[in-house]
Length: 207
Image (tube, rainbow, N blue to C red):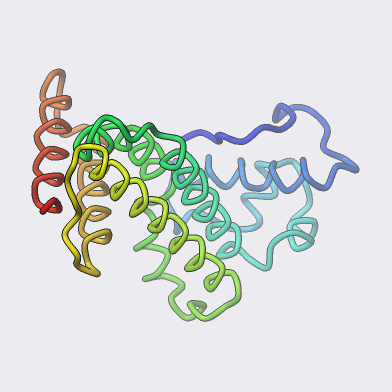
């Protein structure tokens, strides 16, 4: 799991640069999550990894939940932007296949830990950052719905009119991402899974 955002190298100084310090905190959190999962994430360990005092973190984040939620927001925003930029002339199955690599990258980076976060720290679910995360999720799903509708239209088809359709597609994409992340498949089986699954998803949501 690696950070995808820009910033100074870990060994460089971030003194006096608020943006770089905030980025250093997030990058350190990504490394700790990769090594030990959500339970291993503590402000003290993040501060040590980022090369700053624990007290400095509180200038940017309330606690470790806010750090993790920010990473989730980044992942959802990046995926929404990726989806928005995809061409619509490959049909729905082609669109879904193009989404899989980025969805897998974001799932591996932080998404797969969301359920653990909710289990461990569910008491904070009504905090402001969680409401912002829900809004970010809504934007991601809206981007996915637009892309699906426009891709269906490009092949002369229409999407099924069902409020659960986008969530169903998202469940399928995260299932594929989880399988690929856990490396249960080898070689050509990975490509075969993606092709078969995205084609099946497309068939199931088209009129």
